[in-house]
Image (cartoon, rainbow, N blue to C red; front, side):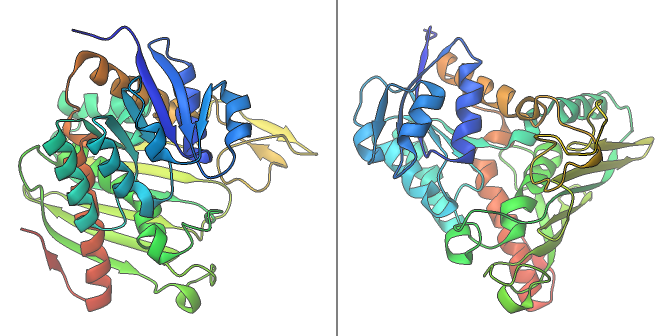
Length: 353
C-alpha cells in the first residue's frame, strides 16, 4: 500500500544537506522530520523548518516515524551511516561516492540487501533534464549506436577539509568529481545484473607536492580515465580541480548516425553583463564581473529535485530504483575509480572481470 507521506531524516548539515532539504521542501509527499549533525544544527533548523535535531545520528535512527534517511556527510562516513540505517530498518539515500573504497561500499550494499531496505545511490546526472533528454534520443536511435562517450566535471577546487584529504575522501578530484561521469556512463551503457566494464586506464597526478595547484590536498587535483565496456564502447572521463571560472560539466556522445553535445552547467539561457558583479552565477564561480550566464534553478537543472522526488516515490510505492541509481551501480562506480587509480600507479591497463 502506497504511503501518503514519506518522513525523512537527514544526516549532515552542510552543502549536500541543503540541496536535499531544498528538494524535499518542494515535494508535498515529504515531511522533513529531523536532522542529525555535529554542528550547524540551529542554522539548518531555522533555514528549513526542521523540528527535531540530534548530535548523534544513531539516536535519530531510533525513531519509528522516519521512513527514509539522506546521508549528506563526508565520504568516509557514508558506508557506516548506510549500514546503521540498514540495521535500523530505514531506506537510505547515499550521496556520492558510496564509500571511500569498494570493500566498504560492498558491505553497505550487502547490509541493505540483508535488511531488506532500499539503498539509493544519488547520481544526480541521471535526472538532469538535459541528460534525460539525451537518453531518450539515444533510445529512439537518434544517433545510431553509441560508440564513444566523453564527459567531465571540473572546477577550481573543494572547500571541504575532508575532501582535501585522501584518507577521508578516498582520493582526490577523480573520486570526488570524476565519479559523476563514470556513474552516468555506466547508467547509459551498463546493464543491471551484468559486469559492464572490461578494461580501465587511468592517469592522475600524485597529490600534495605533485599536484598542479592544490599542494595542500593529499589527493590528486587532476585525474582522467578511459573505460572499455563489454559491448566495445569506450568512455573518456575527467575530474580536476585546476579549472577556473566555475563548475564545468560537459558531455559528448558519438554514434554511428550522429552526435550529441551537452553543456550542463554553462548552458543557461540568461546572459548578464555587470560592472560590480552579481550575487551568484554557478557553483564554484569566484568572479561575477562582466559577462556571465547565471544558472536558473541550479538544483533542478543538475537533477537534484527530480532525483529526490523519484527516491521518495520508490519508498512510497515500495519499488526498487533503476540500475543507474542503485547501490549496485554505486559499488561499480567505485570499482572503476579504484581501477583508474591502480592503472595510474602501475602504468598499465586494468582488467575488470
